Image (cartoon, rainbow, N blue to C red; front, top):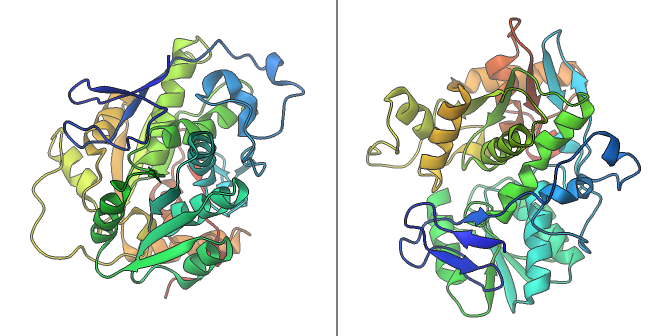
Length: 365
């Protein structure tokens, strides 16, 4: 039976209760879940044209909250670098992959309310899918969040709570509210169902590349939800004998806010002690996370894959956004980080996500 499992102390809980974190250590849950059976390329023919086509690999089935998310195209950018266009999702970001899982789970649990916290994209995705599921939703965002993102959240009918201070202050406010009885915390960080949604990014890649994966998969990393989903997918595909080798995971952070890159370079298993004071500002607001709760798992996943961390400067982000726009892709500033980091690679194949539409933030100043 699928259950929540704390990776730190082994605490378990049923997924039918509104338990958003481990009650012992207050850390995020993993999901004790096994893939139902092996996939094959032939078995996918004729299935629904969304991420739900990979039903054997998902912890939920027969959804009613779907907006047709998934199945975004792969488009070559150079001879070795390919982009996956996740900004073509229903709410214009890859966060739809996980948000649909959370909203579907919440619909089945019938909570009194749903809350989420976000720097923007996860909040807009949760708001949209809660609207689809007819669930009351409140989204906490930090002050300074893109006006286009807050407008989108309100348009989906969600209540918006703007929190003074940092992204961390926003998360703390949401977690305090999450302890209120009858609340489902649709956390893209703490709830592992979100990761089992983002892993479909790699399943789609595997299918569209004819049953193989590139040498490397680059992803922008703040809370690490896309990277950890990719790690789940590559492990599952390898365990099923559907790929011979797991690709290297290349984690990209903004140089201005790069706690995971610093820990990786120091060969640490956990985050290093952070200096006092507020985090530096960065154009890549979606990955400006000073203390990601799943840091240990992110660092381990990158090392186990033979990957590495790369950082990009603000000038590189600006240049990359304009360069992609000149190629026909209008992508938000967070979503261009991987192109800034690996766009010049020529020695191996790599896929980068264009994971948020430029309409969400506009051009970098």
